[in-house]
Length: 125
Image (cartoon, rainbow, N blue to C red; front, side, top):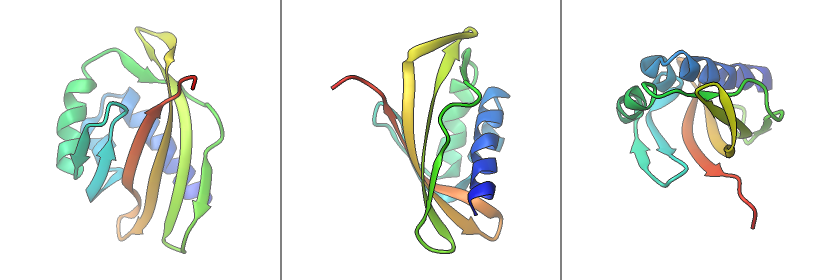
C-alpha cells in the first residue's frame, strides 16, 4: 500500500511539473474534495482539471524530494497521507511556498486515487 501511494505522490509532482492538468486530475477520484492553500474548495476531477489548466500556465513548479511522506493505513482500502515540500518560481526555490498537504488515498477499480486534498502553507506561529 505505502509504495503504491508514494508512487501516486510522485506522479502528482510529475504531472504538475509537466503542466498536465488532465493527468494531474486523473490522480483524484471523480468526486474528490480539493482545498487549496487559500481555501478554495474544488469538487471533483473536472474542477481540479479546469483550475489547474490555468495554474499550469505559470512558472510554478514543485520541488522534487522533500520530507518522506507519512502513509497511515486506516483500512485495507483507505489511508491518510501527510506530505510536504516547496515549489519554485522561474526555477528559483521559494521557501515562502513551503506547504504541508494532507490527503485521503482510496483504493478504487482504477487503482489508488486521492479522494481529498488539503494544502496548508507552513508559517511561524
